[in-house]
Length: 342
Image (cartoon, rainbow, N blue to C red; front, side, top):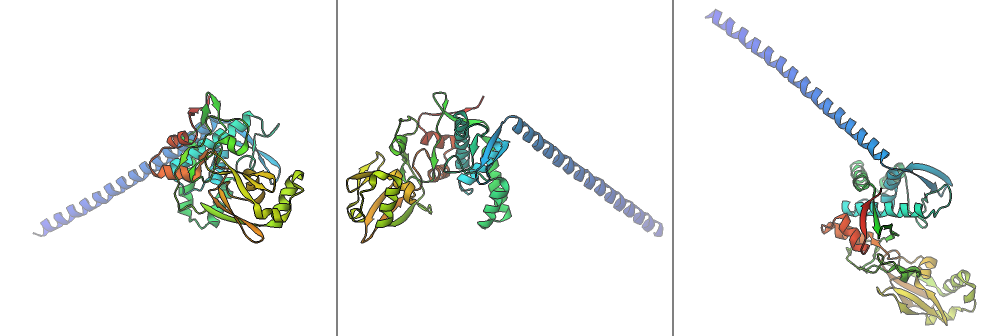
């Protein structure tokens, strides 16, 4: 009986040892396999980045604050433009649409040599497009209170929007379009000639627009004292030297655009364009009404921006309804084609 117990004990010990050895072998095999997979994924990502950079070109960006001209890959530039121009929490398809629009805007600017010799584009949003490098963007997001996980998600969306649409631009009849965009145009966008005059562009016409009503800057108000109003108009144009503060009491809207925005106002016998007022007095858009008080004018404004081309709030609204970035682009730019650069 004792011999059987010794034999049984010995067999049990051997089985335990074999089990432990097999477990260790399996553990290290799995660990090695995971390491190999991680290294392979890293290699693929590095190769992807190399391919991506080889497929692009270097552009020269003027940093207006310092005057420095920096050469960078077009995709790095777009990664800085897209989140500088559009909120990072918008739907991915809206961000993709913004990436294609920004790329088109950039190449159109380069083709026109709009910045002169040695510069392709600048980082001034009022002149070209807003741009921040990755560190600046992350710092801005941190100041807004986004945690690390959210920042990572937003940056991945920006990167995906740029890379997944790589080399895609918008053309009309084989030519790059003037890819104007703005923040918000409730109800309708605007035809380009109504805002800046000049030629009509068949792809920049007024179209119906649907926007979420919870947009923070959907409505705004600007109040201007009579004296300040008249003085600024005079400073802008000497032909308005005859204007008096009491003329403000009879200010009225005299012309509207086809989309329903204000085109001109009249003060005394002088017409002033609404777009000029938007610039002089910081109005968010030319879609406004005027309220005349005892010694001031109140502009009650709807929307944000010039109203031409893609509406960013509208793009996000349509994306949340299931529109693809191509659907969004084709909605705002009439009769265009989305093509790959040669």
